[in-house]
Amino acid sequence: MIIFDENGLPTGRKVTGGRVRVVIIDDSQFVIKHLMQILLSRDFEVVGTAENGKEGIELVKKLKGQVDLVTLDITMPEMDGIQVLKEIKLIDPNIIVVMVTALGTAEAVKEAIKYGAKGYIVKPIDREKVIERIGQILR
Amino acid sequence: MRIEYINPFIEASFDILNEVLKTNVKRNELYLKKLGESMKGVAVVIGVTGKVTGRIVFDMTEETALKLASKMNGENIKEFDEMARSTIGELANMITGRAVTRLEKDNLSFYFTPPTIISGENLHIYEFSGMEALIIPLDTGLGIIEINIAFKEN
Image 1 (spheres, rainbow over the protein chains, first blue to last red):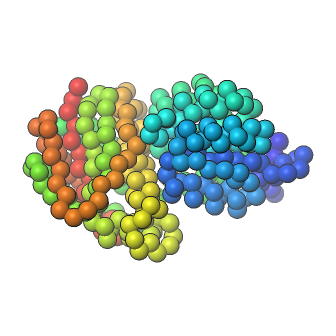
Image 2 (tube, rainbow over the protein chains, first blue to last red; image 1 turned 45 degrees about the horizontal axis):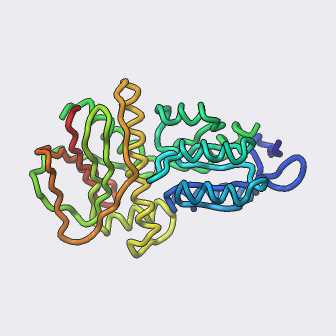
Image 3 (tube, rainbow over the protein chains, first blue to last red; image 1 turned 180 degrees about the vertical axis):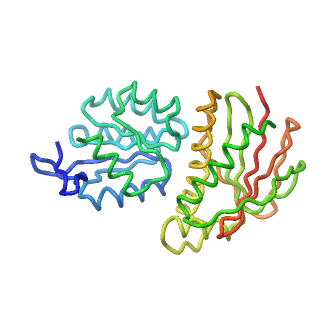
């Protein structure tokens, strides 16, 4: 459970103290940079980033118990976001996974929800949209 | 090439470019490109499968790519470095994603690959399957992007 500000927007702070710990997995440095800026501006703690699925899984394994939320790109080379999602859920089913995708309501998004993703953010990465969406997911 | 496959790309390009660049994007006349014609210097290639097989190339000069990357990052990017490449790849990815979403609404299944970027002088593109490429030239206000589409229906 997190603290919401007076405008009903999520802060990255937990009711129980501490901050929401996030891992960003995306093959685009551009997306990582912008998501990180947005999350840090709301007090979330970005504990790690990975530019491909394999690295992302290793990171989540290494940080087991220290990650609350993962933002996960769907379209990545080698291992796509759906495969990575399944692995993350095996490592720690409590991690909240939010898919980040250029695809709107396409099949891949529905599949991600089926495998345990809590929601999705449709690109372009827009500050207000990301904050609002994460708020809905964490509420 | 059927127009119902092309229109979503035109609409998605306008939407995404307007959203991320906040400039007034204009479309110039569509045209067909012959085999082996030269590219401008930076080409983002995305493969498409499903209802069709083919590829989309987002073709622009390096100068345009740098201007677009600078605008999208809110900082002056002077070299076509990793961040510039990532930004341009992401732009192509967003346009393709939006177009594919529209196509899926019409119950047409499409899948696409992550973007590959090719850059350099004197680039030429050749199709082996005898496909003709349709070019959508877009004036972004920061330079021209030509969206080069070659699809073959399965």
